[in-house]
Length: 132
Image 1 (cartoon, rainbow, N blue to C red):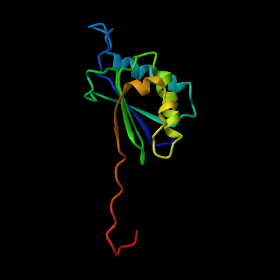
Image 2 (image 1 turned 45 degrees about the horizontal axis):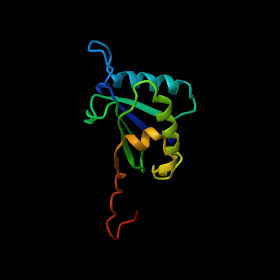
Image 3 (image 1 turned 60 degrees about the horizontal axis):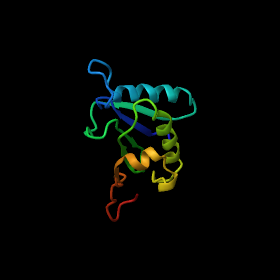
Image 4 (image 1 turned 60 degrees about the vertical axis):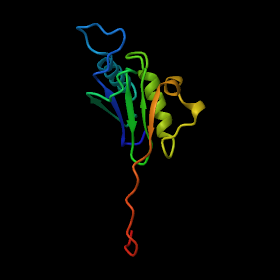
């Protein structure tokens, strides 16, 4: 994976099976992702917890971003069982020049769970007559 790939994990997502006094699904997903990432020492992925991705109706939710690539937000993820699927999907994402993985090559959880695809941030325009 590119060194600048970041996976944001919503830690406040509440899964349907969350116990009222136990950890939320998003926090459990974060733990599962970190455990799975430990099994992949060559993966250059940064996982960042965030308090809310504002996709409360589709928990558990993650966002993947990387410089010069499209950003994706995925929801409806199982807080424990989807960690391997997410990391496998991110390997496919990293294998593209722009972050767009062909539809049929995406894990099913990504095909069904996509919430948004956000264009890459535009490069600043250079003023005419100035060197680039």
